[in-house]
Length: 240
Image 1 (spheres, rainbow, N blue to C red):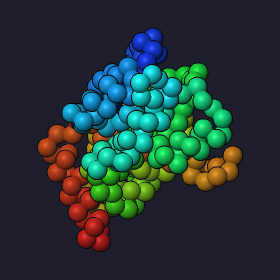
Image 2: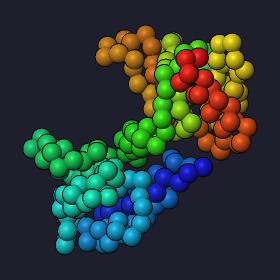
Image 3: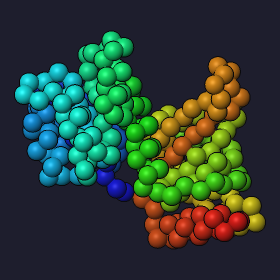
Image 4: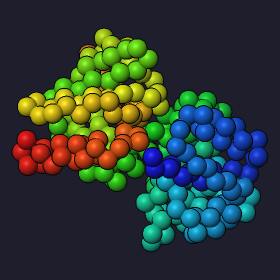
């Protein structure tokens, strides 16, 4: 399983420890590097590849805004996802960060659950850049904790899938481990795919939405499952 490499930038050791311990428990495949300010973070970014930067705003030497500006102007690093973790909550501050190109923004104090949810949206976008996704139809089922939910595929990639389910079901939690079964029409089923939940969202903008979209990321695929998913994607691209 590919590591999610995160650079955690904050000048307060206790905050870094709080974030590190929380997200290490939430993500099974995370690797965390730390920096105490923007200057140290800049040096690490120039020498290592990171999937995501979690950065405080107010720090001595080089603050988060200055690091963000530098990153977004860098010829090879500017696409690196960047979440600002800060006590600044005024609308002008948020807009300023957005204009500078921040990927996400979370205000202190926060819970680890809220940070994890913010991170999963970024990881999902990262995966969508890495894997080509194709539209799909047909049944899919998700099993977790003795429960099973049945739905319809929306799209699929070598890295995961997006599907839609009736909201009447009990749903797994974000980052919960699940087992996925893809059942293409007129094709062999691809069963027992280990995955974890990346995202849950209402299928429309109404409070009482009848359907829920669920995105999962595949993990620990063996050669036969990789080959089966590749073949299924190829058939979809060729018109079924």
